[in-house]
Amino acid sequence: MGPFIEVVLGGLMAGVLYSLVALGFVLIYKASGVFNFSQGAMVLLAALAFARFSEVMPMPVAFLLAAVLMVALAFAVEWLVLRRLVNQEGIILFLATFGITYFIEGFGPQLFGDSIYRIDLGMPKEPKIILENMFEGGLLINLEDLIAAVIAGLLVAFLALFFQKTATGRALRAVADDHQAAQSVGIPLNHIWVIVWSVSGFVALVAGMIWGSKLGVQFSLVLIALKAIPVVILGGFTSIPGAIVGGLIIGVGEKIAEVYLGPIIGGGIENWFAYMLALAFLLIRPEGLFGERHIDRV
Amino acid sequence: MIATGPMQSHTPTNAPVERAARKTGEVILALENISLAFGGVQALSNISFDVREHEIRAIIGPNGAGKSSMLNVINGVYHPQQGTIYFKGEKRHRMVPHKVASQGVARTFQNIALFKGMSVLDNLMTGRTLMMKTGILQQAMYWGATQREEMAHRVRVEEIIEFLEIQSIRKTPVGRLPYGLQKRVELGRALAAEPTLLLLDEPMAGMNVEEKQDMCRFVLDVNEEFGTTIVLIEHDMGVVMDISDRVVVLDYGRKIGDGVPDEVRNNQAVIDAYLGVQH
Image (cartoon, rainbow over all chains, first blue to last red):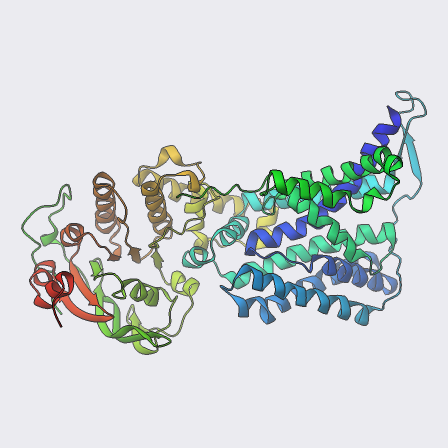
């Protein structure tokens, strides 16, 4: 029993981090109907900025500066791209985010350097054994993962509440639902877009810091964002709870598959299992677990 | 321009008001020589008319006459190539819809444009966006001023819910409601903004007789109780003649008639446009 729980716990904690990246996708999709392919690049940019800033200044200041950078990016994206594409088809906006992706992936490392940088958040690295009296040998957990999972969980809960309870959250949901109607009640689209891209940038920063401290800040961070795509397919593009649950399912699913299914078919499952799971889900429930089901009146 | 004259002879099914006695005020919206073209298609040609305070002003005309385009011009969705708009005595410059909204203009759409995933309550609350004063960071904390503000707006929205008799569907996601109720909710959202000028694009389209009567009553009540100026597009001639103070008639993007319902009814150009004549 003990080893199985360890696997599940490990999966849950990795899953929360997937959720965090997925959340960035969901936020922008909800508020603008745009699938923002550049979320991964934003994670990289934010992590790079934080890593390099914190080399020369105290960590809180570096954090603030990196956050400011992400807000500046949000303004730039709105001003240079989105504003000019109001009322265009979703696919056009989606392709525009490709442009943004490759720009950030090139420009970020040019600005901050392209080596591997360390982020040391001062979290305990050594694993800890808990519940020794309940299981034989106890459970081995990684404290760093646990703290990261708690931070991510709090952020997710905060955002979910913000979306549901505040006037700005309501305006964000309104814009997601119908641009034209939102404008007619006096919601300025430009303003809303800056807000969601800023919040997504902030989420990217937190994700980048946590992943960066685990794996080091390097280009491969953008690949983590690709792992978030099956998460949003599973959870639904429009649902914040969906991003959380989707992340957890993918995290746990791929760990269990790796450990118990891997040896049978020769390992390496972790790389593609999430995508298979998402594909299977697409066939059964295309709108995702928590997505809005579209019922068209005929 | 003709002042509000005596209304017509037959009383509507249930419109209770004696409209003849009503007083309308100064001109609140004036459109002068508006022309709008999409590429080679002339949607509006040189149209002028005005709207007085507290009046119900109908825009009618056959399909494709340019009625919705006219509303979209007032609302700032379309920008006419020629012409001038005066609102509350001031010349209006090129302006986007959310700016127009901030001047006190609210509207509904021909094809309902509600936030379908959100509850009736939330839909109405979005109508009050412009009156929300607390900033995003303050809202993120959600205490003090933000909470008080939310409560105050909620009280007003509840009044509108009661006014429109939709208490029982308060929490229902709008997408699940039948068409007639959605139209009513959309009116509610527009009312939540407490507009001085309300634009209604076919508020009764696709409704049955009963729903139409209800909607007529709401439109008249809004006009009476809140003094809201209303510009409405409507195809149902009975309704138009019953509830409007003055009617402007468009056909192929041109104005072919303007006046109190009785005048418009007897206008030969209008009759021709509706019945069709050999030109």
